[in-house]
Image 1 (spheres, helix red, strand yellow):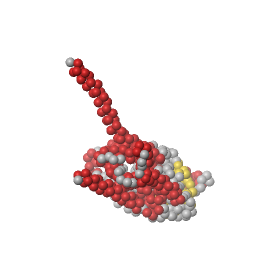
Image 2 (cartoon, one colour):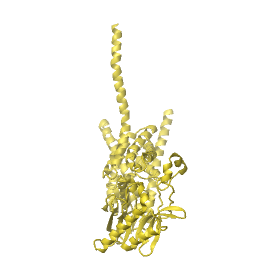
Image 3 (cartoon, one colour):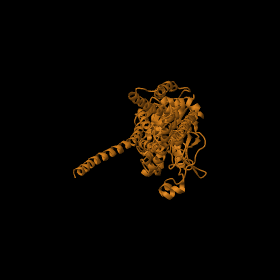
Length: 536
């Protein structure tokens, strides 16, 4: 009887301990998932409007830690969590006017690319020099996101979070792929250095080759960025031009401003006439040309005599060419167009936006989307058509390359204007739909990166702000507030030389994708050999 009682007591005592142990084990298993998600959030915090660019390094260090040695299923899940932690807050602006559905759907789809990269990083994590292969895999993921689906969505490239960082000069070396690669490599190298330091304390031995890889992964991007500063210059090569940027503002934020198209046109004409009055009063230098934002005239001036008269009056008041952002219907097709408006001759040249925005300017899978949600088809009643040629306007002797809003996110769209002879770049945009969200600042940072990438002054005329003038070294010299009418006038340097990034074009990205493919192939081959050896 005594023995039986003792047995029961021991069982009762051990059961809570077993429960506690299993609970602790479950919590430990959750740690990688938590670190993956928090690392993604940390990466988001490194993006504008904050200037905490350096947080991208510990973000990728954490990502490398959770993926090292993982199987493909776990790596996919952890990569997806990292992607959600990064993209959910980064892209919240996409749901400002249309609700959370499209925002969540976009993030869910884009995070799949990050998850696939996570699988690749886990596969190469045991290879010698793994930070190199892993960073190249991230660039392969960015390259894929920039192209599919629906012609791609490159928003959230790591390069676009580095406008205030020490790595920025690398944009002039090899564009956004090289800039992104350097940041990611440095982050993974940072983790590898910490890991080797911990292992070295434990085992008192660290392989020299592994230590060298860790050191180089951190040092080479930093040294390369410092060396690339010689490529960054704001000195004039072709003289100067005095440019005016007009921000007319909109009657109110949101999609409904499109129903007040004439008011938006009037606002921009009025602000131009106010600038002309200041010029006549000697308060400000007369500009050589004036830049209006995208959608500054959604009333087609080719079909509407009143709209044409309003623009003509503004152009004659200031007495210099104006680039007007219009919505034009031609041959039954709709175009998002920049129109070169001469004060004497009227419209003389046009540029049609080439990279149009899915679900905003055209509706992919229209019949399927309409069956799911008819609101989408009612908002995008007619698809915009795509332009086919670069847009470089000759404005009072200055070659101005046009990159309309969304196009600034695409490497090819910006480069084509520079290779076509642009001495400065203008990024006319309309951000009124996105209210006061971070979208405006994220897009402004893209323009700063593009300025350094191609060594060009970049102007950013926006309907509702933030409009800005950016020097070829990426520094903002003037900017407006949001939802105010304002204008910026500045003498800016004109440049015609091409950076290595401009000359090389897509080649650095191709090289990094090939490196990624090589590392992944090596990892797969090593895994196959290992399984065969085990079977033998």
